[in-house]
Length: 91
Image (tube, rainbow, N blue to C red; front, side, top):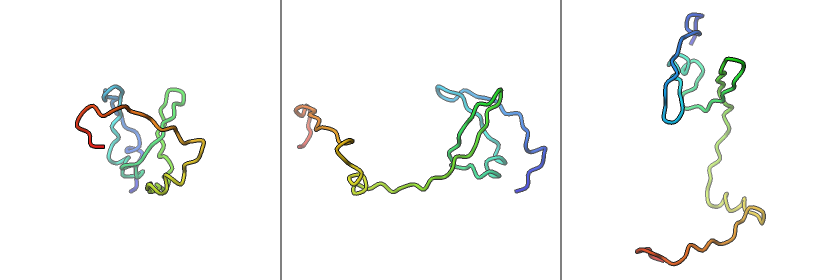
């Protein structure tokens, strides 16, 4: 999609969003840069906020087998005793 100079500069409001603030990006920007569902990185530079698409990392499929394979003596915790059952738990 070809963007023009007119499309690259827009005034966008900062809105309260939960406990923080958000900026709603125009659909044209999201479509042009392929940002739908993407993670972005923000950088504060002077009086500007730079939003950059994060590099897409290949997501690993976590299975019990792969997680157990990653265990070793350094990252293994001790058994935790949560006490006796207090409700209708089945043990």
